[in-house]
Length: 456
Image 1 (cartoon, rainbow, N blue to C red):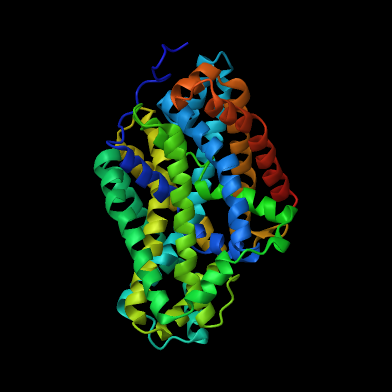
Image 2: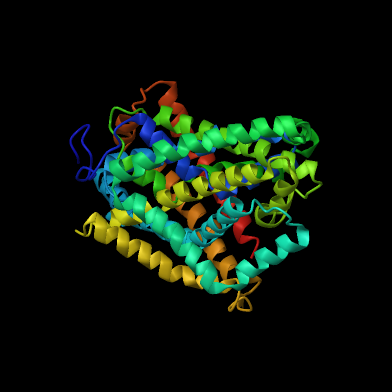
C-alpha cells in the first residue's frame, strides 16, 4: 500500500507547470474534428436546446464522473495508463491484471490515430488550397471531383498523412513542458479566437439567425429514448475518455490542482467549443441551402463551395481550415502522447519513443490510405477497411475501456485512494461521485456498447 498522499508508481517524468496548461491540453485533446460538425448536427436533429439540456445532464452525470476517475487513476499511478491501472489496483489490494484496461485504452488510441491522421492530412491539404486559391471559382462538381481525386491518390494522401504526423511528432518530441505546453498555449487561444472571428463574420454576412434557431430552439417533442442515448454517447465520446489521453495527462497533473474542478472546466469548455462550432459552420450551411447532415462530406465537399461564394471568402476559408487544423493536431497530440509515454517506461528516450511510435502509426496508416482507393473493394461484412478500424476502436474498445474504468473506480479501487486524489470530503460531493460512478455511469456506457454492437 502506498503511503498516504504519495503516487503509487514512480513520479511522472514531467508535470504541467500550471492548471491552465493542463486545461488547454485536455480541451485540445477533447475537441477534435468530430466536434466541429457532429455535435451541432446531432443537436439540431434531436430537439435543439432541448437536446442541449439533456446533453448537459449527461455530461455532468456520465462524462464528468468518469473523467474524474481517469484523472484520479492517472495522477495516483503517475505512469502510463496500463502501469497506472496496475499500480492503483495493487495498492487497492486487487489483481495487477487490471493493467489490461489501460492497455486497451492505448490500443484504442493507436487504432484511432491510424485513421485520424489520414483525415487530418485531408485538412492540411485543404488548408493549403485555402491559402493558395481560397476555392475561388469552385462549384459543386469541381469540389466533388477534387475530393475524389484526393481519395484516389494514395501517394498524395500518404504525403499529407505524414505531414500531419510530422507536425504532431515535432510537438511531442520536445517534451511535455517545452513541446505540448508551448504548443497548446498558442494553438488553443488561436482556436478560440478563430471561432469568435468566424462567428462575428456570420452575424454580419447572414444565415446566423437560422443557425441559432436550428441549434437553440427547444423541441421537446423530439426527446425520446433514442435522444437520450445520443446524448449519453455524445457526452462519453466528446470528452475523450477511454482513449488513454486523459489518464496520461492526469499522470502529469500536480497534486495542487483540483480534479473535480478541472473535470468540470474541461466538460464546459468542450461543450462551448462544440456550440461555437455550430455557429461557425451552420450559417454557411443554411445561407447556401446545404445539408447539415452530410458529415465529413460537408467539410470537404460542400463547405468549400459555400465559403468561396461568401464575401471575403478567401480569408474565411483560410481561417476555417486553420481552425480545423488546430483541432486535428491538438487531438493527435493527446492520442499519441500516451503511446510515447508508455514507450518511455521501457527505458527509451523521448526522442526514440516519439520516432518509434510516430513511425509505427505512419506505417499502419497505409492500410487506412489504401482503404480509400486500391483496397476499397475489401470488406468485412458491411464494413470497408476504415469502417472496421472505426468500429473496433469506437464501438468496441472505447465503451469497454470506459465501462471497466468506471467499474474499477467505483467497485474495486480503494475508496481512500480515490477520496485523497479527488479531495472530496465524506459529505455530498464524495457521495454523489461515488454513486454516479458505481451505477449510472456503467449502465449508460453498457447501453452505448450494446447500441454499437447492435449495428453489426
